[in-house]
Image (cartoon, rainbow, N blue to C red):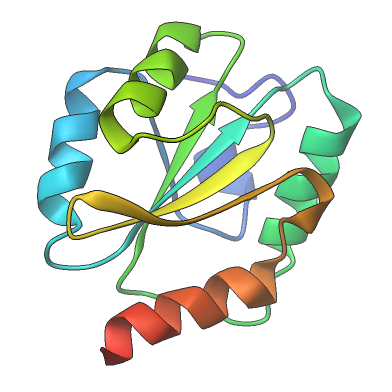
Length: 128
């Protein structure tokens, strides 16, 4: 599957896993008991969302342990709605979440999304 801007798996710095099925949310909950899972909710038509994605991609350090999931909100809005329900958060776009031990332990939105802050949060989870 191709991202509207580019092939996300081939051309991006982070190892994004496309989030395209609701069943993946259960997989994320289970996987998050072993290592953090990051979900980035991206609106491909929104310039702020594109900036937030670039900021995440410009990370100096990336956790090889964390799993990075990418949700195209325009194509998969029902999954975004399910994320709100499953992880008990408010919908925002763009939005980045860290799922740890089955729950959302961190979320940031819009231009507050910062790769270094995200990595710091991941490191805190991994060291606890």
